Image (cartoon, rainbow over the protein chains, first blue to last red):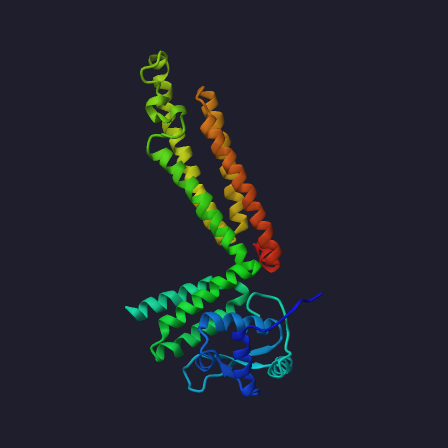
Length: 100
Length: 215
């Protein structure tokens, strides 16, 4: 049976930031600035949340020519549902790692 | 200076990310440019390095990488250093009492006049054999870290043959082979551990194994 656990404070911060603009693709550095999380916290969290199907990621063409493509993230429907549930104070996520 | 340092830390972080997280490593590297443009490159790079190390510990693939490096750095390279040292420094550890060449040549012993010539003729071959075994330890460590299992198998077979030759050679010269036997025992343990690592790698990356068998 899959164990459920409460999202960490960092995960709550990230879910909150991402759910504010649910359909907008966000870049890692922008999320860092908005949430105040360090890259050492944000990226493992994004990886775990992507593995759990809470976040989707895609490579986006650069806005300026000659720049590399950037990885962008947004919440999936499941991630958004979790963010809403969390806002109501009852969100649990499947536990697959130390950070979730 | 700071830019070079942060670039180096970022490169290390990317290298520490496992194969299955290669895309994430690339994503971090690209965001690093955005952080650098705002003068926060070092902090960003250190965070990425911490993330990569955390991933190493959390994921089986990471534990595999750590185990491989621990085996190479903790056993294979010390064994290489010991054997190359033995070969280049007059075999100080190979003979009983650690008296090195002088002990081997029975200096002051009753058989010195009788056996010295034979031993003097044999020592260069022993030294070359040990040197080759030491170099083979470095080669097998490198091949293991590169996951080149066919080279690991070839080198391991040659090492076993070399170690057996060493013991037989010492036996034929009536030298006490205790230290040589100990080294052979360590080699057997080492090769057994490498085969476990190879099997683990095959479980983690079946595609790489198929590719290796085609080569």
